[in-house]
Amino acid sequence: MSDYLIELGAILRNARKFRGLTIQQLADKIQKSKSTLSKYERGEIAIDILTINDISQALKISIDELLPSSNKFEIHDPSTIIVNAPSFFKGNTSFYSYYYDGRNKSIICSNILVKKNNESDSTHIQMYMNIKDLSFPQACENTYNGLMTHYDMITRIDLINCDTPIEKASIAILSPFAENDFRWGLWSGISTRPVMPASIKMLFTKLPQKIDSDLKKKLIITQEDYKQIKHYNMFTVF
Image (tube, rainbow, N blue to C red; front, top):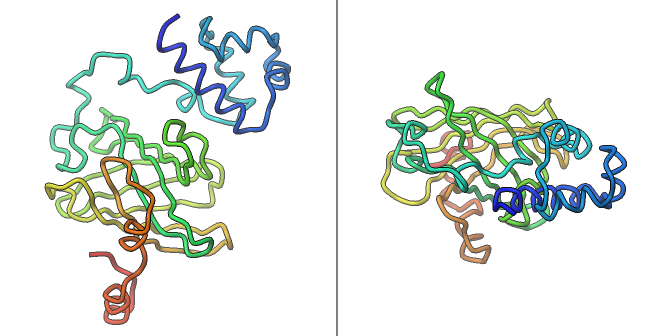
């Protein structure tokens, strides 16, 4: 039994549970027996590509999201590293973002996976927003696909909501060349509760952060932020 199949089975099981389906219900949707699907989820047998496609359609999740991250199981290929990437992103395959949601008074954590695009200066990314379990970010409120492009002073990420294409959000991350493990940025997109344009102050980190009062203090809009808003008549992040 390979580690890859075990990891694939765990992702499949979590995705099925997230969609509220029993093993039998999903087995019926993909026209497989309950015992076969159970073996898939335990990593006991390999899943052919046609079945992977059937599962992705049944669970309304992309094939990429079902497959384990290749960097866990393969020797890292130096050619996939972005040579001129800013310090914050260099060599990283994922990072995290946090913001404070005043509507329900909670900290929202997101995981951003980085995928190299060798055909341009931009990098493909996938963002899982409002995750509850760091080990299974696919179980999230919103999933975004997008492109990340680095400039001298700002890294720009352009995103499309996979479930709500009306939302084409953007992120601007300040000073990505600075030598530290966190950066501030501004999210601009559409709020879904209620539906309206919104800009959000976001913290980006290389490692997961502890969700506590100290993090909340960093994320809430400060008096200095209000002064800057009043001065410029716009919401900015420094």
